[in-house]
Image 1 (cartoon, rainbow, N blue to C red):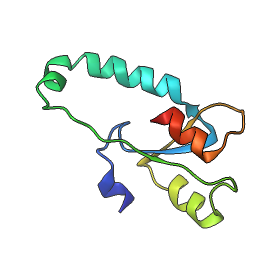
Image 2: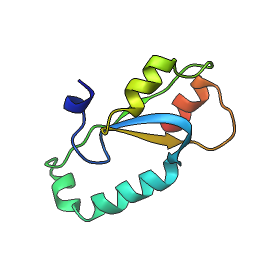
Image 3: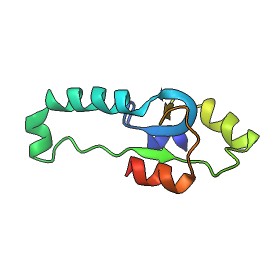
Image 4: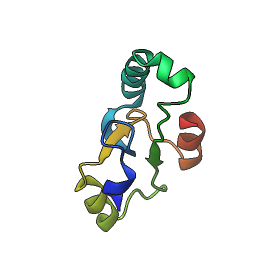
Length: 94
């Protein structure tokens, strides 16, 4: 099911973790790619959806982490090394 949710590019499913790629760099890359397709975006022809998976204060369960990291559709992203509350992560990423 994870594979079917991903569009096959970096806009698929992002898993928030402390060891992932810095989110601001991923977003900058996305913005640069999208600026190359500005016409499509402005006409609504290139809409993308990104799903961000956030764990709770205990992190991901072993089974969840194994499932997510085992999928090529899931990319790990990070807000940095500072520990944050789940609610803070949601606010920042929104």
